[in-house]
Image 1 (cartoon, helix red, strand yellow):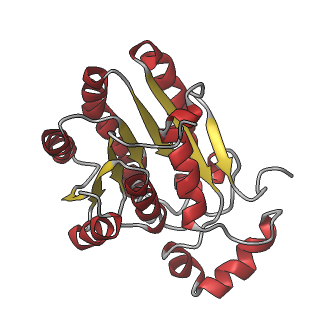
Image 2 (cartoon, rainbow, N blue to C red):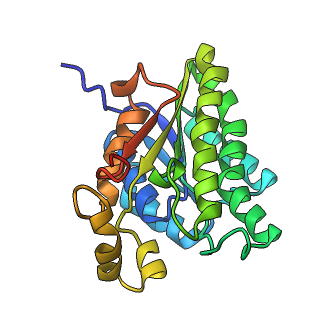
Length: 252
């Protein structure tokens, strides 16, 4: 029986690869047989992810809000791998806790430049290589907060909602080129960002766990398995969709 989740012979780019979710995605893709370009603003974090992924993974330092930087990163990955088949847009900056009254325009624009602008730029440069390869899969990492709101996260919620709609439009634009575009919306996940916002992981678990029907936070590996599904032939009839892996956060 054919393993539809195999990525053997595929080449992938993962942005934000130094973070918990996208590091797990990079490792899962490599374990499934893909060659992975691990992009992150922090070169040391990108290197560590590539080391953990192994299987010929490459670390590339990249600011996804930079037009020239993203173009150079994609060209390097395509040159080293010979083709590109998968793109995961997971880079996201740590947004300030603020309402529209507290957030100045520069801060608002900075969050959008990374979270949404980065997905736009990376997709812009990668799609021609996917077309040349006969098709591909693009995954924007959105959030359960892309469809519901929460206090103090107006910029974050706005960008994640934008990614969900962006994927639908891109899916319509590129279906004829055999390119599938979906979003993956995690719930609250146990990553290094949780202690930054809540003080400790235990405090994050206490605050956010009960908001999920499963009464806990998710793990990066659980999101990675969903990303593997979206990147692989297991989801071959799926495009323009938002896959929620949120422990039931949005169910009630």
